[in-house]
Image (tube, rainbow, N blue to C red; front, side, top):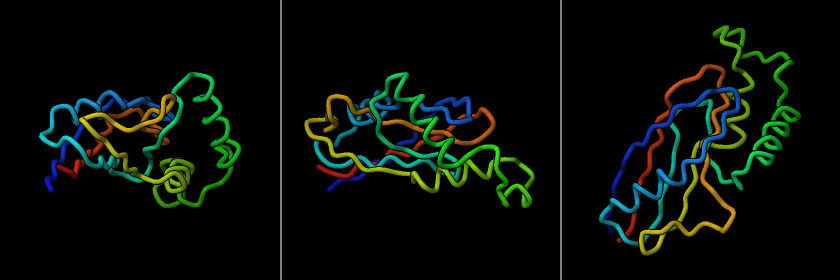
Length: 139
């Protein structure tokens, strides 16, 4: 069993920015010495998540609208009283979605469905660089 850990970076515009990172994960797997196993994709921090989606513009809009209905921007979040950074909604959304996921791969190819892409969802308010840890385990 081998383990390899890499970090990839993306620029995020913040405010529910959904970024397709599938190609970056593919590249990490292609360059690794591991042929078959699992890829754990993890975003450090408490205001972003990693998930899968059919990455097309209208579904991305639907996702943003659903998050706004579930966790509205215009309500009071007590977290704002702690730091004054107006991102309580970002923390709640990210906590609900979770910071990581695991995807199997074989013959250096992710075993995703036809319409399934891996995405980073940045719920935080400011634009920023986001690092994503990719850990491969396998043979």
